[in-house]
Length: 452
Image (cartoon, rainbow, N blue to C red):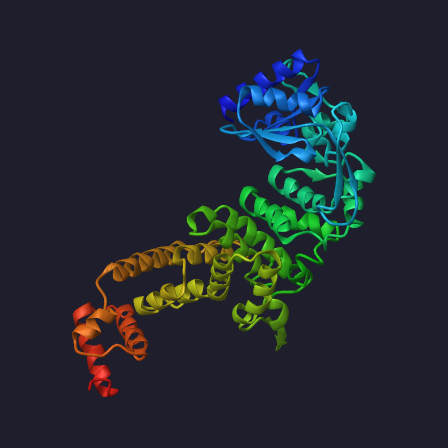
């Protein structure tokens, strides 16, 4: 947490005090301080003076930023600090943004804290004295790792709080209070903007040691239906016990997620990697068959692609994220397969060339294996894949046949160049050096009549 931001908060608080007001640290900042967790956000709430007086104070010490002046929220240029005033909110619809907001500087700390979602987020701390203001038992809930809503009537007005509850549970190891779960069951999440749903999901996937808790709590609250319907279909979907003693596909997916959380930083796109861990077995819902008393999921990695894409597009329009996730999901079985058959380097090169993130693919396969019978890919297989990736990277770093080489050899540029370059790429992946590959490519071009 920046010392400059804290110093500025104290400076503002001192000026507010001179006018008879009070300033409090609020929200996650107080919660995280009591948990011993670093929080770089500095959020303060100013009570007991008018908005005009607050604006005058901010103008006197820097360049005021109107983040949401109608809602009583300001900033200062050059500082990472949010300055807010107490406010009341009244729901005008069922969407996350469907609220009418009233700024009320003289609302009082209890009523101001009542608009917060959970007791642990309703804690306040006097900026000057350091006194903790705890109107709803948040300190005890924090000590007992319990996530409890503040107020029945206001909690249900914002459906995003269902996802927030689950991501807090995942990130901080909180148990959601039974009465809060009961309220969560009554709330409709359909009207949430996809950006807000993705934001809460991303926090759970990236920041939690056990992201499975996010989905397990949604399951308890019966809230998988809209945003995570493809995941819900995996509940109760049986797998071969000999390979999956952990249980159904949902249980397996939760274990894969937790294993992937420990490996994600080795992937090119950690969020896409976690999405792939979440989605990789969606295809099992449409491929399950029982043959001769055995459960099979043939081609689930390819048959699941339309389901995965539908799920991703419900949450995001980020093309590269979707492309990355689909690529890893479609190939997720392959590393373990080629390792099991001890395939040659040519097969590995072809696999890695198909993948936008070969290292991420190997890590995803490892997370998948870790979650089957609790086993890791054996050390020999890991060394095989690691060594194969090293050789592949060395191969791809060497000079290769390009379009300019074909032109220099006397070929006229044309649509057929893509065919010739694909042919040259196959030779490259087979480990053939550039000069030899070029000669073979030109011979192929002659056989096709491309030379005039």
